[in-house]
Image (cartoon, rainbow, N blue to C red; front, side):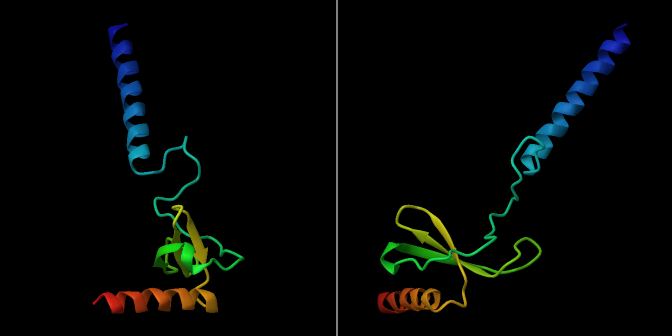
Length: 104
């Protein structure tokens, strides 16, 4: 009887440790389907006014993300995915680069 209790405790402890490790790696079976990297999966259909954008980063297609994109950050803290080949996207990026050049 004592050995059965220890085996049950060990199994429970091993299961809890396994779930903890999965959760730490971002692959919890109880979480929504999210990857550890936040990728754009599609582009915004409408241009965004440049006055609403506070910054941007580039996303490159690789083994984690499937499309090239520019991720714009808005004054309200939203992330907007845009196609880097669009004219309005290129204009906003050039505007940011010009502002940076004036600062230096």
